[in-house]
Length: 92
View 1: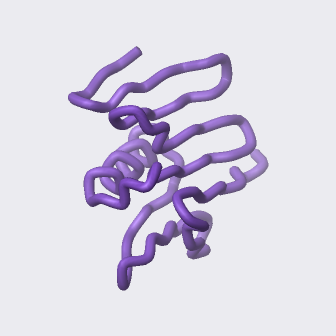
View 2: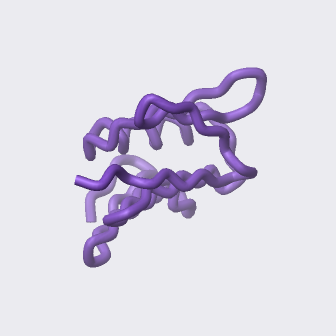
């Protein structure tokens, strides 16, 4: 377990969870990346998601425009459905 202030990284088998306070903001599995605001649509939540993307070389970028959340991933823009967004990882 690695802690950065209020952020914890947990490895569970082949799944990695980045937890900010008590919310799993990023969950990385073999097939998916799950982004979850937990209802906390804050700049810090976005920052933690983008830091995870950079740290684990996931290739996504979360941003906000007109109060809506989006994610740019694999040359496409996706919008959050409520608090969550599930990204399918590329087959390697």
